[in-house]
Amino acid sequence: AQSVTQLDSQVPVFEEAPVELRCNYSSSVSVYLFWYVQYPNQGLQLLLKYLSGSTLVKGINGFEAEFNKSQTSFHLRKPSVHISDTAEYFCAVSDLTGAQKLVFGQGTRLTINP
Amino acid sequence: DTGVSQNPRHKITKRGQNVTFRCDPISEHNRLYWYRQTLGQGPEFLTYFQNEAQLEKSRLLSDRFSAERPKGSFSTLEIQRTEQGDSAMYLCASSPAVGEQFFGPGTRLTVL
Image 1: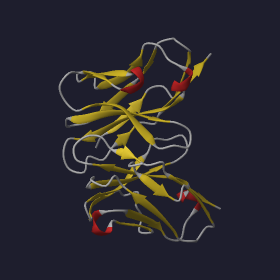
Image 2: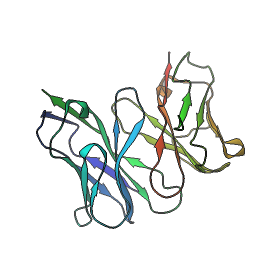
Image 3: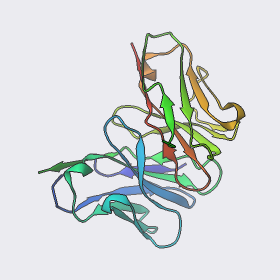
Image 4: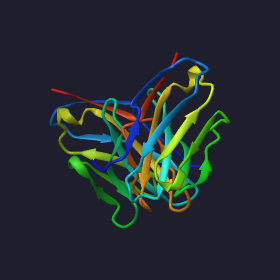
């Protein structure tokens, strides 16, 4: 069975400051890794994904994440945040084969203060 | 708009009533998923279809829950004899193959 731990439930940051949202996972097999963003009362939107290849992945809205296999981590970063980045962020993993259902972390609420 | 759509967006019902939700995936996607999200939590997997075949169900999916995907197109999720613990956001996602799942806006269920 797989599990995902998002180490911070809430992260307050000032506008234009850098941010890192932490994600660790546990799995006995190789996985795909994802970060999704959820705005209030909406579904989830994919920010970025790691399927294979370069461990540094760039996504939408200036976000990037680095896959670290030895530390089983997939932390999300942005060098300079905006008010519009205020949202809930979810890290998720899936198997490489079969149903490839997503296993999500508990989420991190990112709040950007002016 | 060619994204995943879900109807209704909101449903309020009384305990013991039956409810049905619909999901229309992106047309060329053969994989369809249902998830449930409660307040302050990440989504949890409920069930998976590949075309019209339901290939995997979570233990979260009690016998009061049933899902179908006739002809491999839209899907319905029915909850019979609703309980207050069923109150949640029900999310549908579709995927063409390996990788990204595209999510709909969700149906928020409130059981009174």
